[in-house]
Image (cartoon, rainbow, N blue to C red; front, side):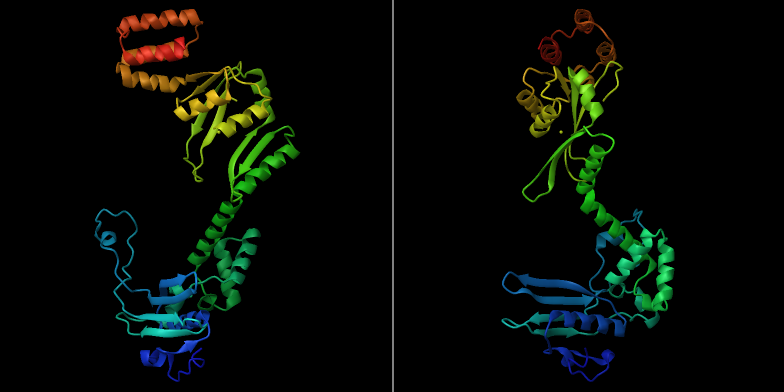
Length: 382
């Protein structure tokens, strides 16, 4: 590389006069030069800025010393910082190197080179710890993956590769880099195969243990999974027997994919428990069009409107937990809430329940309470 630039000085003695104005035929050659130069003198360089546009693509790149700039004041001034204290590495070093792609040409020209550093350079025995010199190649990555599939521990993988390369100095990365690489590979594989894994699991269930399992999904314009519904044979059988009432519960966008999760919960004769328009329509398709008589939800308005649209004739009621919560916030009487909860969860026929409800309102003088009247009209009379 030094010969290609026609520089006769040693790497440590190169100045701006020797480098500025020199040309190389591609950007990758300048990138290689920076790597070799920083390794030779004992520093680590990092990319500071890149300039590109639609017409020229990448046309300018700037490297700076890794110790350029200063640590943000907020990171060093917090006294009650529970994070591990890290050594301050930024010291305002001004060393930098810029290259520019000539307009209308494929040649890259060095425009700015400041070689002076305001900090000690790294000793040769420690060069392998510099971030710019710690890189796991594609061949090494493939080798690490093979060893991991064979069940070899990461620490043993590093020791084995050290022996193959002839020592830590020639390995090119540290044990921590290897741990990070394995974690990144595992994370990327999970991100890329979650949807396929779910569909594959459902397909395997249909082919083996549950041939009548019902599953349906939809994709968006970018062919990404956006809706999915499934119901196993046991759920379909329970729905056929106990379809009169079920709860419609949604956990709204609390998962890693920022998607709503909707769960249908029914109750059988043992009192054991067995996502909006697209989901309900798919549910009806799965259950042969049988519409439930009562649907219990958390009172969400959009959910209520969807139920009215898809389940014609079904009665929509608020779940017991939300009724008790509303009673606590609107009546503000612990004694009433306790008695109301007991009335709500015990078993009475309808006339018995109405008599006990009226007696409870009489006892606490709540006939004029706005929430009580609205709830009675909606949940009991409606």
